Amino acid sequence: MAVVPARMVVRPPNWLGDAVMALPALAAVRQHFADAHLTVAAVPAVAALFREDTDVRPDDVIDLPGARRDQVRLLADGHFDLGLLLPNSWRSAWQFRRAGIAERWGYRASGRGLLLTRAVRRPRGLVHQADYYRHLVRELGIACDEAGPRLAPREASLREADRLLARGDSARAARLVGIAPGAAYGQAKQWPPDRVAAVVARLVATREAACVLVGAGHDRDAGRAVESWLRAHAPAASGRVVNLIGQTSLRALTGVLSRTDAVLANDSGAMHLAAALGRPVVAVFGPTDDRVTRPIGDHHVLTASVFCRPCMLRDCPIDHRCMTRIGVDAVFDALDDALGSREAR
Image (cartoon, rainbow, N blue to C red):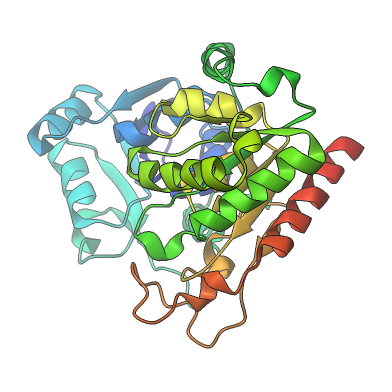
C-alpha cells in the first residue's frame, strides 16, 4: 500500500556541499508528496540553505539543537508520520524511531537496518554524490530526473550581501570574482594560498576585477595568507580585495556568491553553493575524487595527473604534488574563460 503522509520530515546531509548536492533528490520528494506538510530538520550549518528559494519548497525549516535529547523532543513535537534520512548514521535513524515517526526511510548503513521501515541498499561502484541521493529516492518509488540543483537567494540575503560588499571596491570594478581559498577536512584540499593570490593579482591587473574572499571561520588562515602575499608582491591589487572569510552567515554567503561573475574554489561547500547559484566555477581538486564531488553543471575542474590521487588524506605525507602541479596560468586561463562565458550569456 502506498504511503500518503500528512506530515513529513526530511533530514538533509550535515555538510553544506552534500546538502547542495541533495537538492535534486529532495526536490523530487517535494513533487512526489506535493500535498504533505514538509519539514526540513537540519543542523544549523545547513538549515539556512533551505530558507532560500529552492525546488524543495519546505513548509517549515527547523534547526536541530546540539543535544541529542532535545533533537528527539523537537522531532516528536512535529508529529510526523514519515521521515526520510539522507545521513547514513545510526544515530539519525535511532532519533527518528525515538521520536515516534512511523515510517522511517533511508539507506541501509551503519547497522541501522532494523531501525528503518524501508531500508535501501546503497549503489555499487563509484557514483557522484548527487546520484547517490537520487538513487535513494528512486529506489523508494519517487521519480527523480537528472536536473541539477536550483538555488536563488532571497531578497534579505542579497541585502545582507550588498552591505558586506560595500566595504570593498567592487562597485567600481568591471567584474567581481569570488575566491574560496579554504576547505574543510584538512589543508591537503587547499591549492597553495600564494598561487591563489597570484591569480587574484592578475585578475585585478588585467581584467579590472575586484575579488571577494569567502569561507568559514576555519578558512581564516588561508585568507590571511592570500592577503599577506598581495601586500608583499601586489599592493595595488590588495586594495581591490575584500576579505569576508568567517564574517558571513550562510544566508549572506549565498547572497555574496550570487553577486559574483565567477568563482574560484577548492572542493568545498562554497564551490557547490556557487554552482547551484549558476555562477561559473573553477574548481581545483587535489586529494579528493572529482568524479564523486565535482560541481554539478558545466564548470572548469582542474586536477593533476599524479599516481597518488585521489588519496582522501587530510594532510599530504609527501610533497602535495596533486595541488602544486596545478599552475597559476592554468587556473587564471580557466577563470578568464569562465568570465568570458558569463559575459556571453
